Length: 138
Image (cartoon, rainbow, N blue to C red; front, side):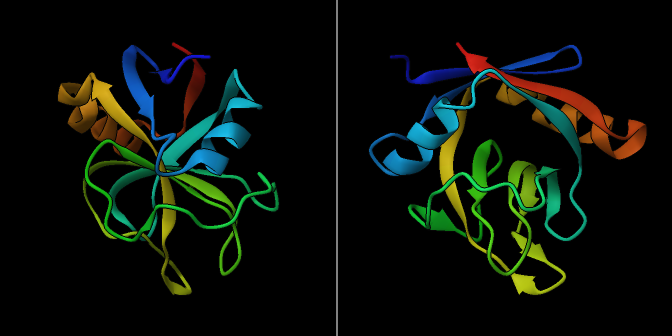
C-alpha cells in the first residue's frame, strides 16, 4: 500500500503524501475510489484555491484533522454537512468557506512534489476554467 498519490491536471503533475496518521479514515475512504477522475474549478468562496464539487456524494467519513486555514498544497476533503461534499486544493492563501460561512475540511493529502507549479495551476483554473484532474496511486 502506497502513501503517495500522483495528481495530474493538464500538463501539471504533483505528488502528494497521504496523511494517514492524522486522517486515517479519510485516507482509507479515498484510496477505495482510486484512480479518481473528476473536474477541478476555481473555488468561489475560499480564496486562492481550486475545488472539486461533489454534491451529495458521500465518502462515509466524519471530521478528522479538520482545518479552515489550509496552506498551499494541503488538500482537504469536506465530508458534507453545511455545504456539499467537496475536495479543496489550495494553491495560495486560503480560508475555507461556502455561502453558509466558514467550513473545516479533513487535511488528508499534502503536495510534496510540484509545489512550485501550484500558482500556475491556480492561473489555469482561474483563466481557462474547468480542468480534468486525476488522482492515482503514485
